Image (cartoon, rainbow, N blue to C red):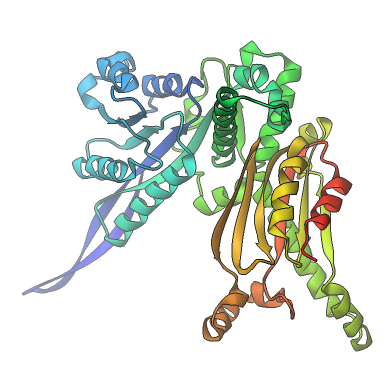
Length: 445
């Protein structure tokens, strides 16, 4: 528990004096993971060994009756030396705290802080929750309380994704399932099942990507080779996450609570695709600065070459031995020229046969002002408009952005501005030449 000292100046008839006020900050840990992975087991294990904390619990269940909260509130987690009345359990049912129940989550956290009867909060998310919106909600609450100088505040301590290693090995074939795109014809029932499977793939990947701890549970049910392959896939999706192996979620509790290790900015950059894109951008900045060392005689040639250039970099995935051993690699395609939307939408589903994850931003000749976000998780592909390119903004706004963001100004293209197609691919045995060849075919003529 940490306390921040805030000085409050009070004026009295005798003169002004300084009074120190203590601000109590309560850590919050989010437990995410798919149904049956072991979140409730981990929650119970923490509550049996709370490391001296008085813990309040918020449990989210998608059904109308919150079974998990019922079991917990009956005292199954309470230590022999702990009275049940010392713990608080709040249930958020019939919805998901990453979307429909966000206002309720804010209210529950605020209520717990106002009551000031706990010094730690555990949130068990529903199995269908994405952790990123939950983390953003908690960070928003934390920021608002800090700005209002509330006497009891909160901070997000960790986002832990509990992953079922046995299920990954069995149903997901240690990650190979994500790249197994079936081209056979299906009837309507099969299509519904395929859609549900795609949603599951996407959810599982996003739960692994956005966390700072991956608890690889049920490792006693798989062999060493399967464990190594699963670890390689997890590291490819989230190179920054700490991976903790467990059986029945038995872990050193001090290693997962009150760690003070979560950083929202780092969480955004933690995913493998985000790190690969950051590396690509850094390489281009260094390349750009290198061009300034050329003689003026070379400037025209460099400029002409720039408009037709495209990059395709293959990364060794940050030196991760397991990733290399199992053929998992990452590459980035960058191109200033626009795509033809029809060609892009035709090529991308076929291109993804060996790809676990891809994400990036693209632009189309048919809609040159719009930034589109392309995303693939397993077999699910999405394409959504996000914003306008800076080059499409009114001149006054454009100049302001370029003043405020030197990196955009430094990479500005005389013809295309900041318009750029950049997509990261993560997969097993990605064929670099094929990706490059097919994506170049999708460029507008």
